[in-house]
Structures are given as structure tokens and as C-alpha cells.
Length: 218
Image (tube, rainbow, N blue to C red; front, side, top):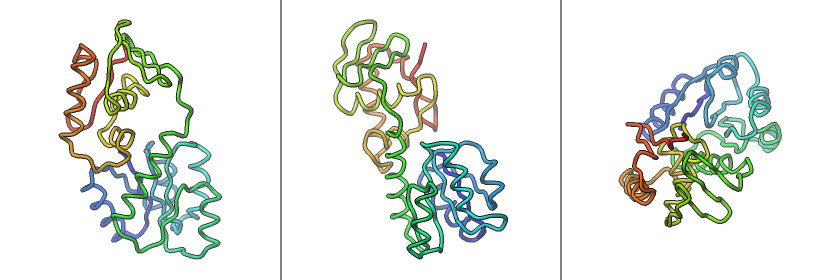
């Protein structure tokens, strides 16, 4: 899960970067509005509103204009009600006032990413090579052979099938299936192993060491 941390206070940025990295996130730091707007694509932005080269509200408005699904959390010392209202109206999904605990930030990150994952309408049927998933009926076939899956196995497969051929991180799978990233790594691996067995071809789901999994789309 990739997070863009937009924070001009070096001490605060270092502390947040370390805490987020320990929790398994890939963090890029931007100290200015210009750096934030030129940063590589990410899953979520933690955005300070007081930046040396511009107003964070303008950055928020621009980022939201680029993507409706991008998660944006304003993280700022501006605690007045009018500041919160404006921040939410220009595109922030959530608004946190400093200081705050990392546990609270973690919970809010998970909540925003859950909402973002369902922002786009789900297709009724997903076809990826030999695999066919009827999303509404929660039915799966491989080469027209029905495959009986548990609820968690189906949800994991759906998480992978939304972007066949692309690597889906463990954090993304955990958020899609368990609605939290606080899931034992072993739990995900066990479900993936069972899913591969039931699909009848372990090659359909590839492991990408240290990152996550990829559903073969051909």
C-alpha cells in the first residue's frame, strides 16, 4: 500500500514515515505543494494543509480532480470547525487534527481505503483467461468447471481479479477481505493455498516475493 506523506516539518515527517513504514506501508515524502503534485501515483495521501509554497487546500482540490478513488486525509494543526468543513468540501475523505495517535491514524487510513475500493461500480462478470467470476452470484468457474469457494476465498479471488495481471499487495487484499491490515501473514497464505488447490492450477495465482500476489490474466 503506497502512501504519499505531504508534510513540511522534517521532525514530524520523519516520525510519521518511520511509524507508517513499520506498519508495512510504502511511504513517499513530499515537503512542498509542488512535490506533492508531481509525485508518483499512490493509494492514499496524508496531507498537511500548511505548506511553504502553497495552500494544502488547493493541493487537495487538484488531487481530487485527478482521481475520485484516491484516498485523502487532511492531517493538520488547523482545528477550527470552518477549517474541517472546507477541507472536506474540497475533497478530503477525512480530517485529523494534530496531535493524534498512530492507532487512530491507522484506523482512519483503513476506513478511507475501504471506501475508495468500492467507489467504482463492480462489474457483474469478470473474465480473466480460463477463469470466470459472476460477482453478483458469487460463482466461479475454471474452463467452465464450477469451483466451490468459501466466502473468504471468493473475496480474495475477487480482489485479485479486479486487476488481472497486476500485483496486488497483501495490504490491499487484507483491506478488501478483512477490512483491516492487521491480519497475520500466515492467514492470507493459508487462504491463498486453499484457493490454488480448488482452482486446480497453482499457476493461476502467482506469488510476488515480499509484495503480494498476481492473478494471471491470459
